[in-house]
View 1 (tube, rainbow, N blue to C red):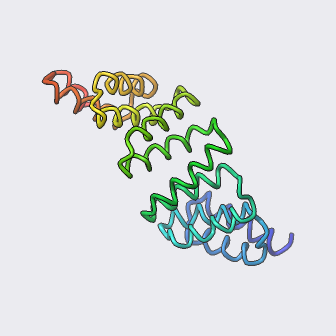
View 2 (cartoon, one colour):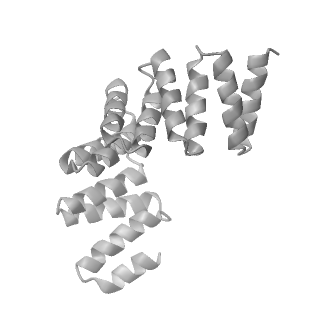
Length: 199
């Protein structure tokens, strides 16, 4: 086995074992030896993000995108990293490209909705969350996010249905119970709110 292959195997093993610092060091060594391996840079970016070294993660994911500019999973990762950095405009750009390249990529639509909502673009956020649940109807998190956005848009009836859909898909989804309980509390249905919040 060559040295790069050995480093890659060590990095993968360390990552799977949860030894993030070791994995980060091995991926960094590997990418220095194999700078043309886009997957190696992507893996380095993932581990750097998990280590909360967002600057290194951003550099690594850009290296990967330089090699594979239309890779949807890498574009999603880049969007998430730039969101972690607080650069919502860059995050939105990567996520918008991800859904252009892969229109059925539900997770990218969902994360784009989150970024748009953080930027105060509520109508655009709603559109993104609706695209997410259209692409993946059993996506409980996207239903919950759609409901939260509809509450901001003062459409509580629709929001409640989204929270109930999320809970039908995942009865243990705490955030959806919380959001439903807060809605019930706001409209004075205290017993139902108490039950939802207790869940």
